[in-house]
Length: 88
Image (cartoon, rainbow, N blue to C red; front, side, top):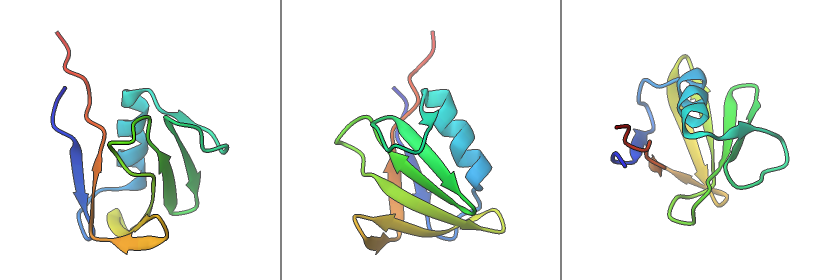
């Protein structure tokens, strides 16, 4: 595996960038919040990881930048997201 994706508030990274990354991991866009899924609501992406090693979170984007991270109903400044597997 590669290193986890580390995102910081204020970083140039869009909702489309995040959903493309999650799709590459095999996550599904679905509203029922099952492990390995995400959902999109206007300018926010709700992420439900497959592993307890990574937090469930809602990331809000403004003008192609990460504006806010909500972790367990609290705001955060950064988040690590599951890494992509190495390819041979």
